[in-house]
Amino acid sequence: MANFLAYLLAMQSVNIGELKNNLSKYLSRVEQGETVAVCKRNLPFALLVPYARKQPENRTRLGCGQGTVHVLGDLTEPLIPSETWEMHGP
Image (spheres, helix red, strand yellow):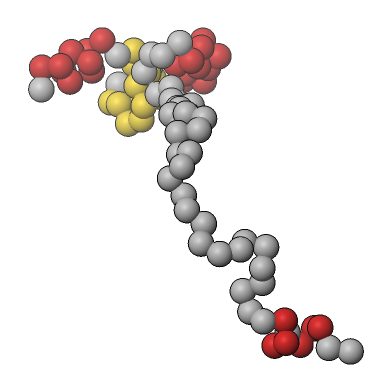
């Protein structure tokens, strides 16, 4: 609870008029990682937070699955007999 209170006290807050007049300044702060509370008559109602784009990590090592798959049968052979195919007819 104390950490959350400290977070709220350290957060930059701005009223709507000030935000409209200096939007680029506040957006650059958000871009740097800060959170900005947007207030209406000094009462916060919204937060501007940085969009955390997580890059997916590729944890697969090349060749790690080698030897784990066993193929039974011929992969190039059709699953159904060619006599039952209608499209092979004249």
